[in-house]
Image (cartoon, rainbow, N blue to C red; front, side, top):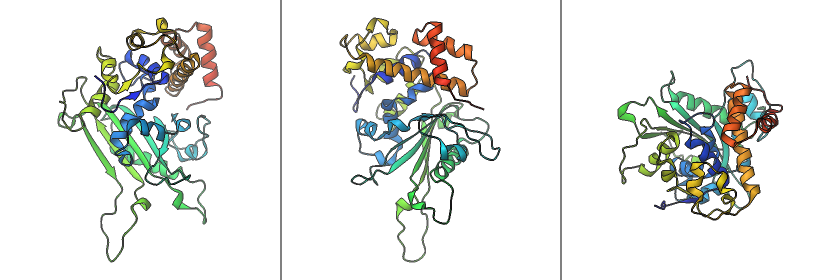
Length: 344
């Protein structure tokens, strides 16, 4: 059944879906699916206040593709100096290095005018547990504070604080959710709560931090159509608990892969998931788009493994298994993606 606001799927999204379908959820490989703009658009439409009333296709266009970056340090020293798309390492005052899961920028349509683009800074944090030993809400607020401070370089008497842009931190927690809180969502915002005298503060001057916490909790989502947030929770449930027979059927109601010409190359080489999608389409397309999607997925896998200190040999084995590479080719890709990258 065609979704109400269905998006045309890309090769990058399909490649991530193929890998995700074989994972149990929240492995390094599974997290690659969150890099797909199609997936991000579904999530942002339900969590970003500034995107209310916009279609998922419009939201995809708001996302700055070049800004999508995984494992950026939360440490102020790194976020102030890291070049987009690179992983140069910095450490601030002997502080423990922490990492955002997925950090990117997207256009703020409320404040952008003419040729001046104002951005939203978005941090997406898919989490295996809602109870990691500390309140997720406090960690989210800490991440927001870091993201705000990282927008300015060295603070001086001439620092222009008016340049600060709004930040969102979105936490999607999968397991260990109390029964009464399952499939719920909470928003935490910085608000002007009380005024004395005649004053009307401009909201855009203080509305800079929003934390969103989404709680799932069960492999089988028992919500009913018509329930508040039903379509969103159903989508997240499929993404976060992907190892199910109905995975592709559910996702295809939100993301349509059947009409994209980039997908019709080498159908016979696709996995069972890809085959089930592609057999409805044409068997021709552009090799360039397919290869780009594969390489980006491979790079995301390798960098995730590197940050999680997975042994080199294990990463190479994963590249061979998931992408059908010979050992020598897998080693070449591994060296290419890890050149100059170090994690502590």
